[in-house]
Length: 181
Image (cartoon, rainbow, N blue to C red; front, side, top):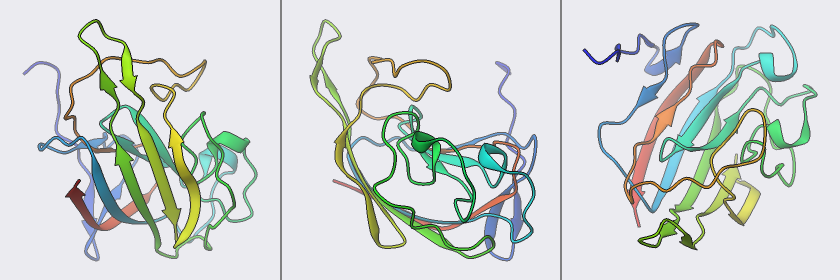
């Protein structure tokens, strides 16, 4: 019904694996301010380059993407690297491990607040640690993640889902926990 189809990720060796065409995953529960820990792994066999190599994303409130990408000896644009707030902020450093190795993101997120007339009263903020290394230091979210064009401020509910992107690459996730703040 309603054009929504179930995602078809595979469970393998205790991890969820996105396979091409499997669809993005979205939590049933919704969140606003939180601390998130997530482990991810790109394929050990290198295939493709740039954005076509181990690409996925962690979407905060379904709108703001922290880029997941095989960033080990893989050139791509600055604000599309692993750990970037996609198309908004490049990571402070490349902390990527070799393909096939488990990596961690620890994310502290504060959702934006909006007035009754739809203006941002308090911008959203994000801090990202990749494998224990600080990549984003309490940066201000400028708006939604856009592939082309500038971020767009969009009024949304205080609580929205977390989602994991299917970008057509075999990316694995495990040991995901979230703590509301």
